[in-house]
Length: 173
Image (cartoon, rainbow, N blue to C red):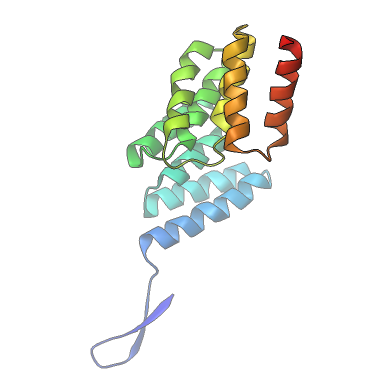
């Protein structure tokens, strides 16, 4: 709580702004999610959204639902995240991943392409890696190679991206 003064100069407590409160709640929810306390995480993400909807809270709530196998609910939250902030790339990637998990590879591709183009997205290499995995499963080797190269360009320090790229290059030689 921040302090303020009323007209008489008496100190009064004022609540933090909605965005700060919402952000604090989704960060707390994330800690619970990573500890495996999914129901508590869900409640906190929902509370964060009630305070002020953010793309992050909707996306992370969706991710928590995915941990429970609730892929339709997860996708719905990602769509809400996109409505709140279409520049946030994570929900596009997550929808692509949820579709991959359902073996809907062709449907996943456009979502992952959108994630790659999103102005606000970290870790930037993920949609490239996911597209590369789809193309490998589809036997589209050169397209997979292109995506793995993109992943390494996006994050040269990502060991998994480097391994995927080198492994595919070895197979193609």
